[in-house]
Amino acid sequence: MEHRERFHRAVNHQKTDRAVFDLSGNPQTRVDYQQTKDALAAELGLEGPAVYLTSNHFLDERILTALDIDTRSVGGMPTPDTSHVREEGGVAYDAFGIGYRMMDGRAEICYSPLRDCTMSEFEAYEFPDPAKISQQQLDQWAKDAEWLHTQTDYAVIAEHPVLGVFELGSRFGLLPTANCPGLRSCDRYIQNRRKSACLRQRRQCGRRGPHCGRADEGVHEKTAAGADRA
Image 1: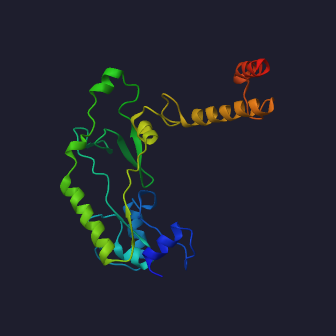
Image 2: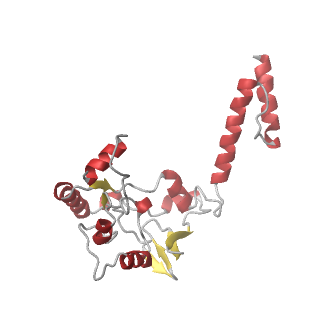
Image 3: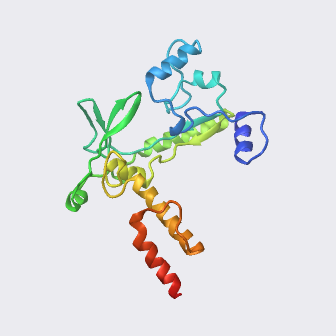
């Protein structure tokens, strides 16, 4: 079975000859740490410079071939540069001004530029201009995708934006993580969801749910009183 056929059958819940193998086909399966790439190449007995099929230089094509990987990635995040882009003190700042430091082989966020900012600071902040996205880069990715589709049997995986609104918010410091307090953290969000579920249970069965905290006592009493009047 060819790689692309295997992929299509798998995503359509049809029987395949084996599981689909994905490595560097999307950001979540990408190998970022160069030492890991080198160790993997050495383990497979590969020597010499890496080989790439397209302009996307994510992982040596020889590694993907040796492991019989079904997917090939194309595209990226064409974020135009801003004045924020720089490297200082071992920290790399991207076009949004978010700072990253390498920790245990991964680029971890260590600086959120809009944390604790005022509204005037937010409004004056420089964001990347979509009008400045390189059309040449987009055209090259389109050519890469066409070449992979017509010249190989791999499943061609387009790069997705990666960063959703909540992740971007946490990176800026507007929607923080547990280590970066601000508007509302993930654990508070989960607590609120549990409280909502508890209130629904209260309305349905007229008794207190097992996970409701004392802080919600008044809410439950009001809910119960409203239900009694109804």
